[in-house]
Image (cartoon, rainbow, N blue to C red):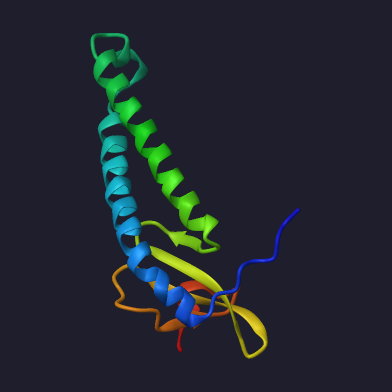
Amino acid sequence: MDHPPHLFSHEEASALIPVLRPMLRAIQEQKHELDTIRLKLEPYTEAMRTNGHATEAAQLEIKLRDLAHSIGAAVAEIQDLGIEVKDLGMGLVDFPTVRDDRIVYLCWMVDEPQIDFWHELDTGLSGREPL
C-alpha cells in the first residue's frame, strides 16, 4: 500500500541541505568512479576473460558491484526521508510540498546554496520557477 508523500515546508527542506549536500557529493564521486570502471570493463571481451585477463575483469566487476550497492543504499537513505532523487549526476532532488493548495516540488541541486525553486509534478527541471 502506498503512503501519501511527506510534504515538506520550505524551512524543513532547507534544514536538510547541510545533511544532503555531503551525501549527494559522495554519491556523485562514487557514480564517477562507477562510470570509470564501466569504461575500463568495456574492452574485456568474453575471450579476453578466459585468456589471462579474468582476474583483472573480476576485480573490476567486484568493485563495480560494491559501488552500485553503496550508491543504491545512499539513494535509499535519502528516499526514506521522503525526498525524491531525480538525477545523480546533477545532484538533483525534489521535496514534495504544498503551494497554492496543490502538491508541487521544491527543487534543489547540490551546487545551489539554498532551495530557491519549485516546479509542478509533471514539469521537472525545465519547469522550475523561482520561489
